[in-house]
Image (cartoon, rainbow, N blue to C red):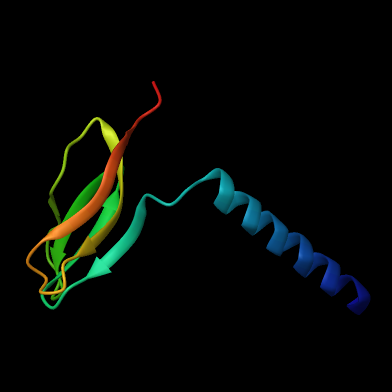
Length: 87
C-alpha cells in the first residue's frame, strides 16, 4: 500500500496543474502602493485600499488589461494596452 502513495500524490499534483491551466484565475497581476492595491479582475483594473473595503473598477474596456504598475511615487498607474477579447 505504501508504494502507491507516491503515484497517487503525483496524479493529484498533475490534475491540480492541469486544472489550473484550463481554468485561469480571474484575479491577476496585483500591484501594491503605500495606500492601495490594484489588480486585474475579469479583464479590467480594480483598486482597493490596503486596509480593505470595496474594490472600485478603474477600467471598463472591450479588451483585456494586464500588468498594472504604480509610478515610483504611487500617484499614477501604468498598464499594458488592452488586447481585444475573443468574440
